[in-house]
Image 1 (cartoon, rainbow, N blue to C red):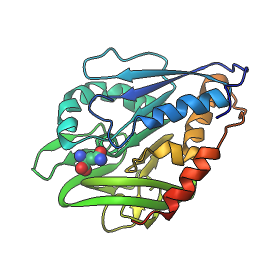
Image 2 (cartoon, rainbow, N blue to C red):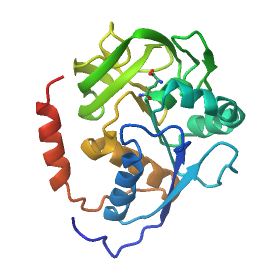
Image 3 (cartoon, rainbow, N blue to C red):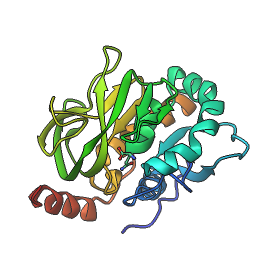
Image 4 (cartoon, rainbow, N blue to C red):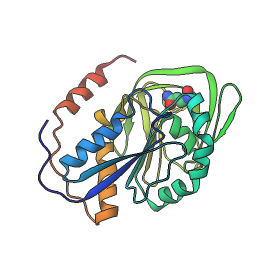
Length: 246
Ligand code: GLN
């Protein structure tokens, strides 16, 4: 990989939500990709974590949230509700955010688990999720009008229905996505990108990483001029991921 360029266009602060409970199938990798691509684009990355009971940091430019077991979602639910107003305000204000699987579900209206527990969401996304006895597992490809072909891996029993207030991230060409019926994957609202895809998502989908970075830079500094990311490994990962069987 090429070295970090000398240019310093400023600091971008990336906050990971609840990495202690919500970080499965390599979701932490999303933070590492933002860290590296921010350097390639000439910014100084600052990675922050927020766990249950922490003080919520100021001046956050990008929010990341990962997936988790139903049990992890139960652990964070009260704290997430307490932070709901802050996160809703940031989302409506245009803060770029990427939420995967378990936190995608809890950025919606609610997740009713297969054992009947209703975990309230924070309602940033007009979606609702119902636990089922069917587990949707495997590699996924989808076509996104905004980001092109997106590749990843899903493993969830919750099935998500989109309401009128969100757009899907894309249409699946392999795998299930939001549910076993309608062929949609993920959700988009303002600058929030929500997806079921682990893997992690960003190493194989740099268009989404660069969307988060560009949006954060434009909001903070008024403009974004890209650097020169080294996509050698990204391209290899995409080629292999696209060939994998479901
Ligand atoms: N516990 C949730 C489900 O099974 C989310 C799983 C995940 O984040 N992969 O639907």
